[in-house]
Length: 273
Picture 1 (cartoon, helix red, strand yellow):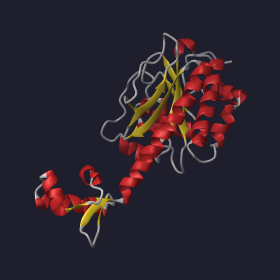
Picture 2: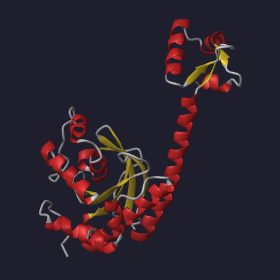
Picture 3: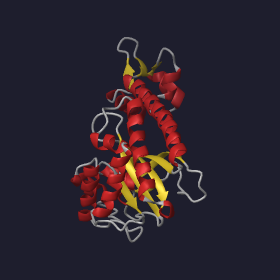
Picture 4: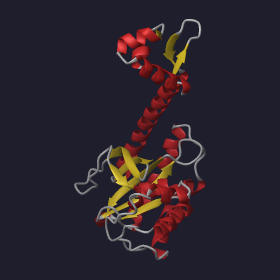
């Protein structure tokens, strides 16, 4: 595709074969496959190969994703300026969440992680939010090979418990990581909806348990909800999820944090109000 794309008028089969040195039978199979998928087109009159519509579509998708990242990072910087806690953006890949953007707090004590890093999704707030977008059978299928490894004493290690946690995540509209991957870290996460269907991205705010409090986490949850809505709107996403929209209100966010205590399911590192 790179070679053909450089030729303004396209290229004939012999031209491509000479340029690349690929055996004719192999080249024919490659061209036929690319044509079937729409990445290349063959002009029936000139017998010249040109780039197909799928290449243009892929380029547009690339541009949209980079535009989304530009919007996301601007909003993420605003969140950190307001609450001074680390915020991350991730995508689900198989049974791992992959970090694609991050803005750090200025505190000396903060989460150490890298853009491009991967963590098993069952033990992170980001991962559980994105897994909650999937049907339960698909969640099980994604962990069929690895199972649910234990990272800390708080890690969910049974499918029954994980599916119960994913149901709770759907109900309240946000997920948590209660020191489930790393000791001393509490995370709040929410889905970022940039189009129809299941969310492909999620945001999280990470707070060391030494700084965790109901008031601080309520402010973080409110900021997280607002960030998800702002980025979604800037990216042309759907109307805000009502479960997320209500959490923008600080009193509603505080009530949601307090409800984590009162449900009795978690051993939380901060005192209830």
